[in-house]
Length: 431
Image (cartoon, rainbow, N blue to C red; front, side, top):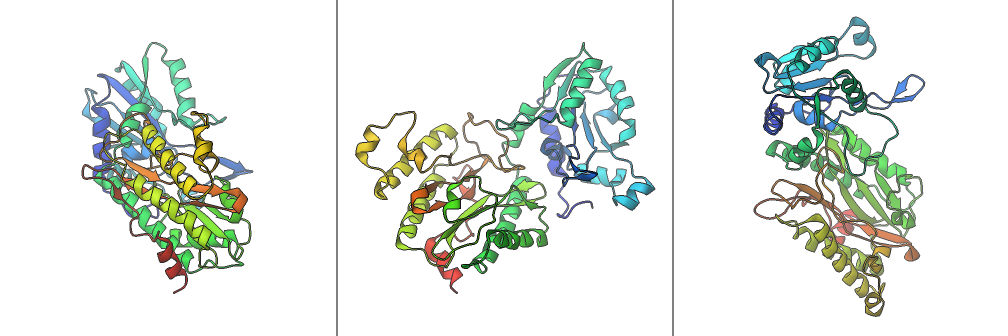
């Protein structure tokens, strides 16, 4: 094994490929490339992270891998083809083990495995017999990059070589499948959540006045890695005092002061599946009366919001409803008045001063997972639920976040075992 996590049942990838092949046009070839190895400086690379779409379809967690799907191929040998990097004695010495063909087949459930050096010849053979070529790109709503991906460079080259072929987008089809999590995937997300819980419980014993934000980050990271996690699913936030009012604060370099709160937003990644937790705790183990008042207001919104993850709802409508709950909480906290609210511009509600972000995003193989924000909630979708109130003038911000699975029988909180009530947090910090 090239990875830390336990082997995944290949049935997951077999089913995913079958589902995708069922929605391709007749006589089509779909092509998926692994992510690039990203150069850092000199001859050093950033840690490799597999392309999520490719991993979803074959489970191969290694650089320089390519997957071809050609369900209508006359020769059944070429209906699913996986290309992996051939190991040399030099690679073994410098980089260690790479997948054998047998290992790649066992992991993916694909019978036809070739070395990468055979790719161009087999691609030429197959493209002579196809009408449509499906290519994969990063089409995430928030994706911005000045660097061309391996998939994009390959697509440009192939379009130049095969101008008479019909090119199609495969990404929306895979996104539609990835929105709905299978039982296999839910189990992997649960495992990520379980590791995250271990990290949180560890810091409840560690946090006290005088420690540094990065020391708390180190405790969580230690717990993640010792439990077979790849590490953090995203850049973690450990924001004490007024730093909590910076939504994407990741410096984590300030000393924690007595009487302050610390907002901690972190989540373990396990087998390329993410978790996403936020907890806000008192550094000295006791909330002040005001801090607890605001905390309980956010917690109340979170409970009501969780109940709203029901089949058929729309994300935009959900976020509007949460806005109303936050608005009501802010009135009760004395931060807004009903008179001010009556005069507010409808497109720029006043609550956004204290709660400037949405309450939910898709979660899965990526922390901001792919999904159509305009499609109704469906059985098997997983979302975060993360209301917050940030009060810079009072020197603190509070966010609480759990991961929620939508089911036919109502929402399931995948983090329900992680301490969240103010009194429980205080008890654990003072035991």
